[in-house]
Length: 288
Ligand SMILES: *[C@@H]1O[C@H](CO)[C@@H](O)[C@H](O)[C@H]1NC(C)=O
Image (cartoon, rainbow, N blue to C red; front, side, top):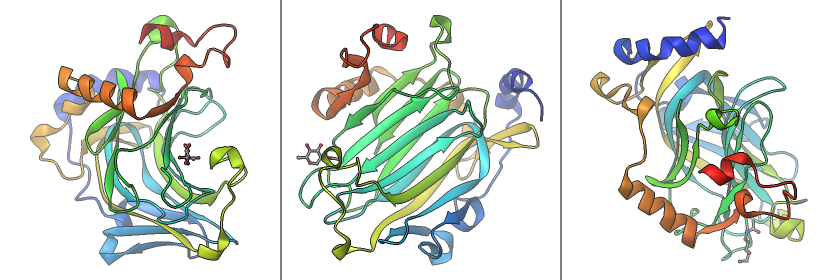
C-alpha cells in the first residue's frame, strides 16, 4: 500500500483528473451481506436492502469499496412500532487498532417515544465525541436521507439535507482528524437492550420480532480506494460536478439550520458535559 502521505498529496490532482467510478448505486454492486444467516436481504434488483433482527441474531452488511473522503447518502426506514432495545448502526470505519470512524446510530424506543440519533467521530482509535438528537419526524413512517460529507476540512452529518453536526479539521490545534485511513460503509441491526433505551431499563420485546430496517437510494460521490491509490468520482452525478464536495463548506443558511437542530433537537453534547471531563473539555469543543 502507498503511504497515506502520498495519498494526500495526490488529492488536488484528483480534483482535476477525477473519473467516473461506478454506475447508479445498486446494493448488489456496491455492498455485501456480512452476517445474519439470511436475515439481510438485497431485493428488487439491488434497489432495496433489508436487515432483520430476531432473538437468535441480528444482521449486517458492508460496502465492497473503501473510501477516502466522500459525500455519501443513504435512505433508511427504521424499525417501526416497539423498537426499544434495538440499535440500527450506519457508519464509516477503517481497519486496525487506531481506526477512524464516523457514526450514525439509531437507538429504538417504545411505541410513540422518540428514536435517539446518536453520532460520534473517532480519529486514530479515540472517540468519546458523542452528540445525540431526537428527530423532527417519525423515522419509521418513511425513508429519510442520512448523509455524511467527509472531506479534508470537515465532517458534516445531515438528515434530509439539514446539517445536524459539523466536526471540523482542527489538526492545527492538535486534534487528530480522519484523513489518511480509507473507510468502508457498514450497517447492522442488533440487540443492545443492555444500554440502548432509557439507559438499558427498557428491554427488547421479542413478541414483536422480527424487527426490520430498510435501505434504499445509496449514492456516493467519493474517492474509492483500491490497491493503495484512489480515484474520485460519482455513482450518479455528472462528471462535471465531481470534486465540489471535496472542498464543500457550510454556507450561512446551512449554519442557521444546524443551529436550529442543535437548539431544538440535540439531547446530548459531549462538548457541554463538564462532569464527564473534569480535566477540561476536549480541545475541539472550545474552538468550534
Ligand atoms: C425514549 O423515549 C424517552 C421518553 O420520551 C426519551 O427520553 C429517550 O430519549 C428516548 N430514547 C431512548 C433511546 O431512550
